[in-house]
Length: 245
Image (cartoon, rainbow, N blue to C red):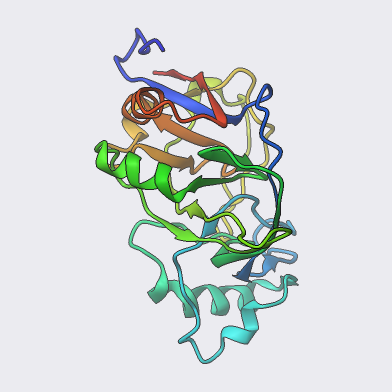
């Protein structure tokens, strides 16, 4: 792996391995979710985010938790009420967007799993791998066990990582003349830049694995995380360098 020569920062996108012999597949969902937004009065958009998961957020003590059990779009006023109602349960600095999911995943697992497994924007680890990375000094590693049943007597023990959303695209890679974010819902309408690079000043210093706040389906890792995974010979994912400016 090579550290970015412009900034001295090593950042890598985490991707599923295309050559892995593991056959693991999860058919699991989170227990609760914030509804999508319907017809934003600021921009007219109907939308929901993908990939923004907080598995360690437990809404079981919330009397109105049933309001988060069915995915659906809601008008802005109702959506904002539901957002504000769960905010006390959310760690400081975590964003809440339409479609954010909460609580542990539950469902079925089939096949064999590597130490790391990336599927539908969800990164999960075997317990041994999770504990090894903690002991190796990886910063900001937290997660919640996935509640699984399997085809065998003992379903695999997997932990979904709770990833802090942070980091921004560098303005130089964004389309010129794009519209500013909606002042009400914050949505921005542009395609994923290709290629893209990140703003060094926006990157975290206290977590080594995180979700890009500007594009929540992208999971990023620092050099420390990559080095630890390679040293421990953990497989199941690959790392692709991302430019930082």
